[in-house]
Length: 293
Image (tube, rainbow, N blue to C red; front, side):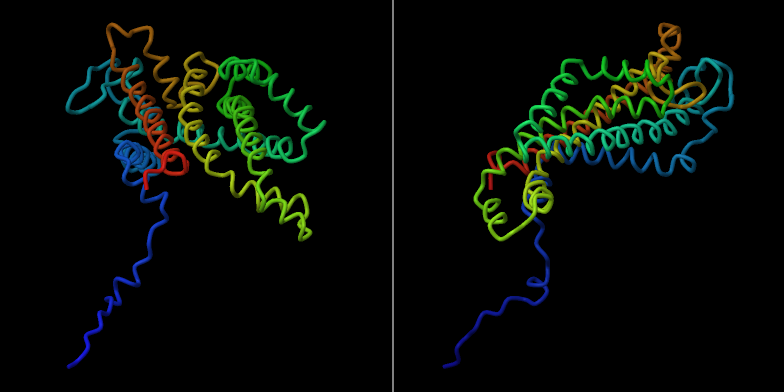
């Protein structure tokens, strides 16, 4: 009597398994919706010159023409096509959010890492500095920086970046304090690992989950603050097709030409909501306390 041996198909064994957090993220419907919106805007930002029907700075029709089959979002007070301006504006607004968060994350993470790891007077000095920054609301802190540097799109990126520094510093410090007390950090010290190696490879590497979540949420907040500063005339300057500036240009004729401010406002809303959905999904996927599997 022949014995039968079950053999797993070779192609099944060769399929790599996705990391657990990716599987959990992909099961989150809200996160999938957020990712779809963000990837859609990223696609638009990259291919805006090929997608936009007109040059965003040129007059192509009569002023304040209502949405129609020819001009889907209508035209602004100078006769420029709003679809083209919103599409090109995605490049500026997304870049503003990503660059601002990067400018804030690097010094913020560094300060939080030093404060949490070394403690003592280093922690005291850094913590008091961060507390002073936290005493100001983000938009007010950004306004102070703009008042010092002057209104421009580049200065808005710096201002919003400065406003995000204390958030990254506080979160990183708390994570470092929790991880520093774990046994494997003491083991690294026993085998002779230096302070910088311990901070980067053993502590920061294991504190990246909450930092990634915060960075995702801060991108949406940075876009919103940047648009608010441009709306006030402190950011991008005409004729730059930036969402906040486009909304500001239509506020004087909101009753007669509602579409000028509405469509860029909806674009801002969609990106901010998408960032929040993705951030919530990442938090659920990366936080061990919230894992369902």
